[in-house]
Length: 127
Image 1 (spheres, helix red, strand yellow):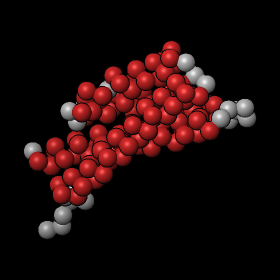
Image 2: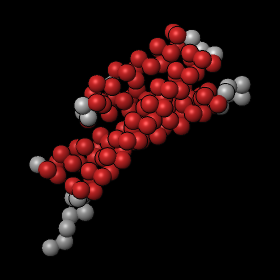
Image 3: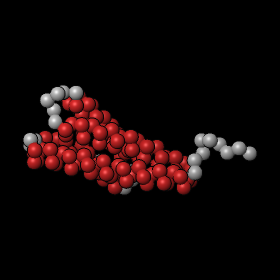
Image 4: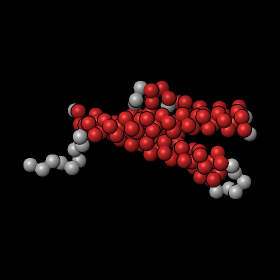
């Protein structure tokens, strides 16, 4: 009997999930570091730093507990960063920070989305 193409190997899902989670943490930390350097050391202010980091910190407890909904909320939050980054990248007077913001936000969006999806698939394959 042929194997259903929709059924995924739990071991493969676990590997994908671990890679995606590591990528999530690298990009998440990169965004927080970018905002700290940008606003506290270059040309920003404490108010802008708080405005940029608080939305990201709202999902941190759920990410630490590896909750699927936290990754979904992170994707919604990242849409704001992606939009702002793309608009600012198109302006000729903007610095390198906007390109880094856009890249990190896009990578984190994709990896958080896939983490959420693979968590559900892994949960369904065990059930």
